[in-house]
Image (tube, rainbow, N blue to C red; front, side, top):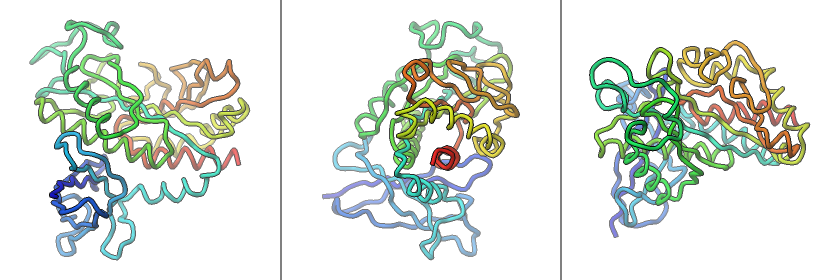
Amino acid sequence: MTIKAEYIWIDGTQPTALLRSKTKILSSSGELPIWGFDGSSTNQAPGRASDCVLKPVFSCPDPIRGGANLLVLCEVLLTDMTPHPTNTRAPLVEVATKYANQEPLFGIEQEYTMFRGSRPLGFPDHTGYPAPQGPYYCGVGADDIYGRPLVEAHLDACIAAGLSLSGINAEVMPGQWEFQVGPLGPVECSDQLWVARWLLHRIGEDHGISVTLHPKPVRGDWNGAGCHTNFSTKAMRETYDAVIGAAEALGKNAAEHVANYGHGIEDRLTGQHETAPFDEFSYGVSDRGASVRIPWQVAQEGRGYIEDRRPNANMDPYVVTRLMVDTCCSALA
């Protein structure tokens, strides 16, 4: 039996990494082998010592090719089999293992914007703007909603791949949508988000649409694109004191988190468009203008989770989940 295995990895492009992939032909569905690639072409190695290693860490059915074919997410190693400097998954695994007894869970809301050419879907082709924000969020109808065929194809592909998507919705700006992954543990949620991102870009090829995770895809009076990150531990799911403790812990470490929540965060976290200023920290019940929102039902029930609203759409989930687990779990221990 011949299997096409699409090996997917995160490259070393700065300030925001890109997804890369290539196809390996396998003769059986047994253990997935390591593989090599040219790191000098992905900003991960010099030409004089260009070999890097792909180590499979997560696989799922390939919903595009179908059959027994696979999508294979890999982490990048050096040739001595140690983590590459651009490998942000390895540090997350260490932190997640350290605090596994607290049972951290994540649900991540990935916003993205669809472009055809140089303009977002729903914007006039050459110049000008659509009607102001208002009818687009969770809207319906051809006057307000753009790109739904791609969105539905992506949702179907993620479900067919066995990814734990929990929903989708149109967002506040035309051509902007969101999908949610989780609830899952920090490593599992991050792995699945990367694969879901790859599928979004790949299916966009078939629709002639490019997808951007830029945090401020259109300047002016338009919402940016975030990756709101919902977090809980076993203690938070049992007591409200732990919920408040996690929110306050994030405030004590706010500068480090903001610095690692995605490039261009200052352009998005302005204090407008449902954001708190990047250099101020706040939390509140049902407050989408706060850095961290405590959902109203959490306050009513006295247990649950928090939503960190600061991460950008282009954030690295391995970095964000590691920081949140480390900061909150160390405070709640």
